[in-house]
Length: 215
Ligand code: AP5
Ligand code: ZN
Image 1 (spheres, rainbow, N blue to C red):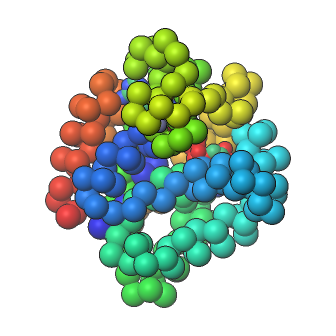
Image 2 (cartoon, rainbow, N blue to C red):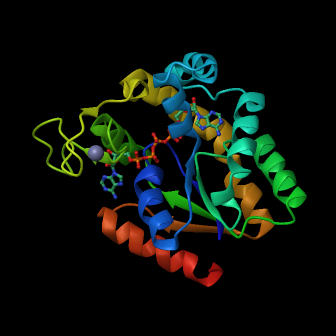
């Protein structure tokens, strides 16, 4: 299956992507994760992306699109993938459509995670990410008393772009540039939305149920 996850920062895309991708045995492709890996690895791509990410702005399309093109060309993505964080604006969506058409394929479904702004701010302010296995935690919801990953023993860190003023700007960028994708994919007839509030496992169940008709 070829799936795109869409939703505001903090909606739980990364959290749900882990479960959905492993359940469907497809790779999870997160542009945010790839950028962050490049930033921490000190690559040229990371150097270019960092200034935009630190401000909460989108990394320019020409950089992002080439990176996704390369990733989709890898062997593990030929039979399906779950995109998390891409596309992020209408030009990226149009490019993705063309890219897939050149590969004689197309998206099956776009899953929108619907959650209000107040909840998103609460989720992002308590988010911690594992430096070892990339698992996403929350200080309150997962009752994390220390900064050690329960799964792998790695150290948990707070993302630079989870500072309050950057979060606010990311939400504005979402409304201006990413929210129009919801209509774009509704017009294509491949959009399904789910309520992304409530416990993580319940959201996963809702997501898998919404995706089932497309399997
Ligand atoms: P990116 O990494 O994609 O960030 P984002 O879209 O802002 O999304 P987040 O990762 O913040 O949130 P999420 O929805 O994944 O939530 P999560 O599961 O972590 O992008 C970062 C930056 O990279 C961008 O600003 C941009 O600069 C650049 N970039 C990336 N892609 C790009 C593109 N295509 N074009 C241009 N630039 C691009 O959950 C959040 C928290 O809530 C966690 O702590 C989690 O434990 C908790 N949580 C999750 N679900 C629940 C639940 N049901 N109940 C309670 N808590 C929950
Ligand atoms: Zn870990």
